Image (cartoon, rainbow, N blue to C red; front, top):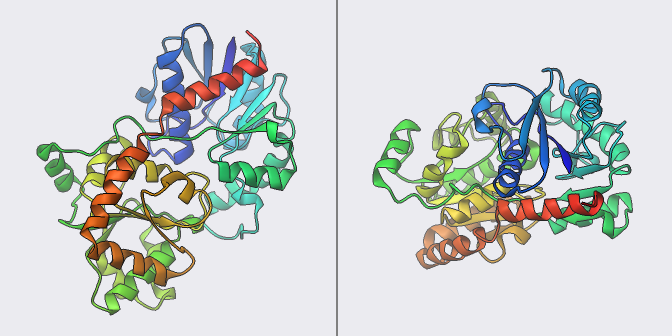
Length: 377
């Protein structure tokens, strides 16, 4: 079987969540492959070393171009040229005109729901508009749709009215390098390199409105006003002007003094940051899966996350839940966890067990079974 896998952006240096999902799937397929040919269609970029040819994997580099042009023009031409039996598009969208069966990974349909496309950066707004136009067309053409949680599975079925058999849940995971770091030298090196505070709440926010940065700032402001903020908030690579504007909106610019920034952190170096965190805070408004939750669980960090969308499904009983739409409940959860050391230990213990239930090997096996059902060996 010759299987084409769209992985347009896996070689960029600063990978997004969907890039990491595609990369980890391909690595897992490569590690377990015995008899198939996988043609990985991608664009050349800075991080070409993250995936190599071998064990049935052949990387096909197509010309670098804007996302829609690459996907709608170069990709379908390559599918014909290389005579693949099936194309798996891994990041929500796909070519409208294809000559082979399509497996589509539809991570979420947030952009089709009642959200404002005027929010976020220009890049995010353009991406949402492209998906809003593309997904309703290609989803109806797919031989199989894969999604990343039962929550999202239900959302897709309800929105499109598809038969249940068309959509299958295949859970994401976290890389095998995610585990609690015990090596003191590695921890000290990370602390020095990324200027980590001695004690910090780790928050993976960005400019996507669903990440709820404004709600987090408000929760911090509430705790600070009561003199009960346990420590600084650690954030990675985020636009400072964006944060400044949000702080002005909540009426507390001084809250920015309680935030420490690391800059960009490569995925392979994240475990040392998780492992030294006091609390991992992930109160998103809406997630289809939430890979950082699995990363944090595997690194044995006590977690606060949302009681909405997929997040309770992913963490099970291994996290403290809050209402992300109410900053008071985020603040209450932080205060509760800060004051309850036994709860911290319990969540760490449960998180390690729960996090290890998700694996890329299982993801690859589930995905491979879908390929086999569409293209009979």
